[in-house]
Image 1: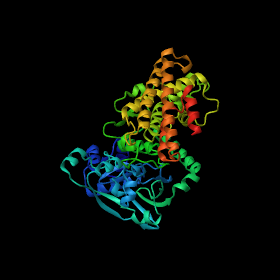
Image 2: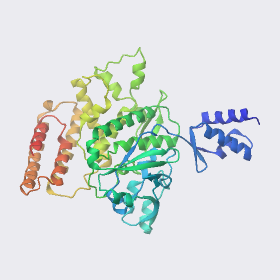
Image 3: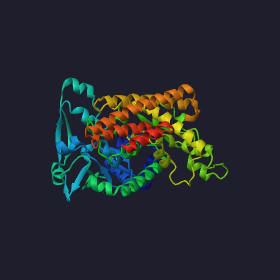
Image 4: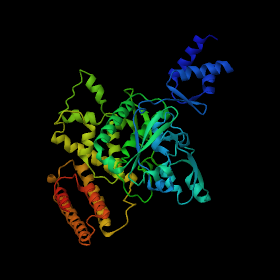
Length: 484
């Protein structure tokens, strides 16, 4: 068989393949006789394309758009205490084949960081399962492990000396830079939380470049399952928001609850040839009502006015817009950040000439976000489970649920607060009275000399999340909080 013929066969196969494949798959599909020489030629041609890498006798497509971007990682208190780092899902997006965590290696001071086998015992297992991704490592049934009481042995990076040298504390970060992208080798350096804050704008600029690159890739036609998942991990990696330390009963990252076994996300083809990623229990047709934003700009015959309500809604409802909204809301809910419409507005419409938000559209946009907030809140139902129960926090939780109810009524009625019927106005007054009680709790804490305590700040943040961006009486409450 001539080399040219072999080349044609391999390239034709690669052009049509839609999933990772083995050499067995290639020979079986092409009908070529399997010989040692043909196998060598095939492997040389596949890897010579420079679009595939071989991993454990399987060929995967490369992802190169992340190659030059440093990765900032915040180790958990659990990892710092144990002197280890478990790469888990936090590193998978940055390795071309999403290989298991023991195949990702670090260099520090030009010296390889050693790995170590560690055994996780009960009740440490839940921590590990929060840190890792169940679909990219050997899938283990955690219930069976817990029942049997077996220890789980994993490979982790030994960073004991690294942590000790830098007096590492929770909130400090590791910056990993790619040395050999295809081999999954990264150099690491220390960055303190304090230094991180002084360069926050530079970090945000890098984050923005990162997300813009990622969005471009997401909008392309996607065929390979492992690429799809890598994009998903990468997307949520940044939205995981590891900028600020936050106390958690179970150290881990927000990705654990978001991508748990009970809520899978998948990709589906759209009639326009693009691909959308969505929760498996959602109909993709319902998520892509309008044409893609870039398609509209390229079509001269298409009427598209960024100052019109319909024009902006068409942008918002492109095949990725609603997913971006959800990702931002995930970040807000899981990390107990303020429920902030403005952040989402700025993210979606960044780069458009202002004013880009007519008042009528702003109302409809907030209603859409409120609807999505309600859905996500119900799905994950965090209920601030990691917060100690106090009288004040019980009241805060009650009010957050009442506000969710109010948002639902706003969603259904499509009205402003000023237009609410009397019974809804009474409901608002009740909320205001309850918030006054919460403020009294805060004042009591201050009188006890706890005005600077993390407890006060956490309470304020929770109140601010559920009330901060709502109009009317809630703005008055927020003003009172600012005085505290």
